[in-house]
Length: 253
Image: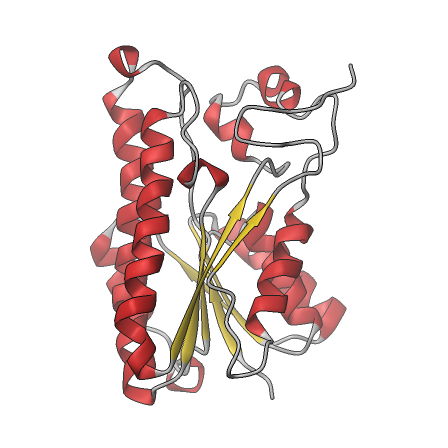
């Protein structure tokens, strides 16, 4: 049975890979993000490649009013959202706590925690009313182990870990599954954003070993979303083979 999947942060990386994975398997996808041009490009590509049904929503996940207005604007025929993939997230800066930039902190907190909450609050009541649904939160190994200079980013991902547990406890009686995927190093725009466009620094993060790809995480999301009704993956930590922890890598330079 075809399902409707809403994916936040769908313009690149894991979100985009999830869009392709679900669309390739005949599911309808609602793609959200800030960059309309990218949303339109991905929509066209999915329609041409897979004859997929795609709906796009442009909004900034940090803005509560934009989130609520966008979700409320979804047409009735698209409003039955079976799966919510809370993917939008970022890291900005890499500073010790006493040198941290408040703007960086706010951007991470507003995106990784508050944005996830805004979208979940807007979509989950309909799942509760139907007594069905699945929420997949994209967390991080940084929500399991804190690493030097990761401070606030790690704190936001610990919040995602805790919120995933809370959602699972509070929504299970309504037939709603909650899964957290916690990846290690995935080669996306993540490091470009963290280093604010410094491509050389961003590329160095992935030198000397094979990181995960966005498609690896999309595969995991699809697997979790298509298990029998009586089975749920609560929490999945996914690492590159060369990464043993947040800060231990086997690199061949």
